[in-house]
Amino acid sequence: MTTPKITLLFASLQVLLMIVLLARVVRRRRHLRVGIGDGGDELLARRIRVHANFIENVPVAMTLMALLELSGLAAPWLWSLGGTLLIARVLHSIGLSGSSGESFGRFWGTLLTWVVLAAMALLGISLSISTL
Picture (cartoon, rainbow, N blue to C red):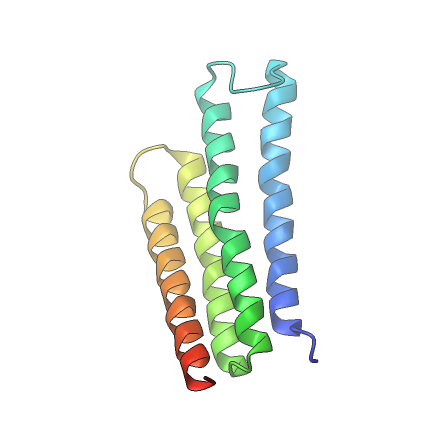
C-alpha cells in the first residue's frame, strides 16, 4: 500500500490554517471573557462561523482526496485539487473574516470549494465504476 503523500501535505497545510482560525477565536474569547457561545459579540460570532465553515468542508474534502490518491488518481490532479482547495479556504477565511456580507474572498472561496468537492466526487465515481 502506498502512502497518500500529496494528501498528507495538503491536509497538514489545512491543519495549519485551522490552527490560525482557532487561535483567532480563542484570542477573542479571552479578550471578552466568553467561555461558550459568542457573548453577543459580532466579531466573535463571525470568527466562530469562519472556523465552523472550515470544519464543515475540509475534513470531507481531505478524506475524499486521500481515497482518490489511494485509488491511483494521477498526481497532477491531486496537486491541482489540493492547491485549489487550499487557496479556496484561505480566500473564504479572509472574505468572511472581514465581513458577514458579500465579498470577493467569500464568493470565490465558496465557489472554488464547491468546484473542488464536485470534481473530487465525480472523479471518485469514475474511478469506482472503472474498477468494478
